[in-house]
Amino acid sequence: MTSKIENIEDVRAFLNSLVDEGVNAHPDELFENYINTETGADTYTPEQAVLRNRLMKQSFEICEKAGTDLYDAMQEIFLSRTGADKYIPLPSSLSAE
Image (tube, rainbow, N blue to C red; front, side, top):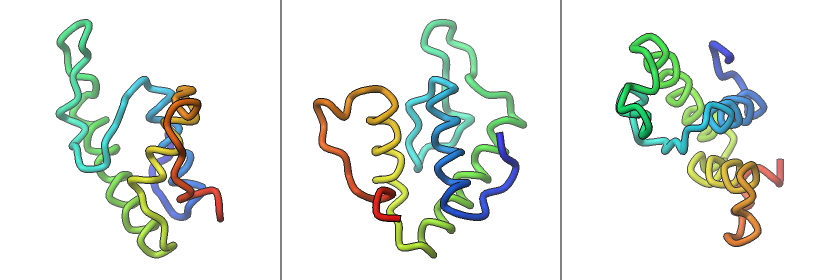
């Protein structure tokens, strides 16, 4: 996982890494709040949560500068990666760039 978000490609990579981790993340949720539903254990260590919270904040900043909606970007990546785009229309937040 990257340690800094500097451009839209970094945002895409970060959002894809969350899908790879099996997390249905929401941009407004702190990562220390994620719990593994099978075990009841925290999904992330405190250090991992701090890093992901910082990366999400940076993602918001980069998307704002680029005129991209981070919520749409997350939805688009999640739907595409999980195959749910067959049933739910994709937003066009990242596809125009």
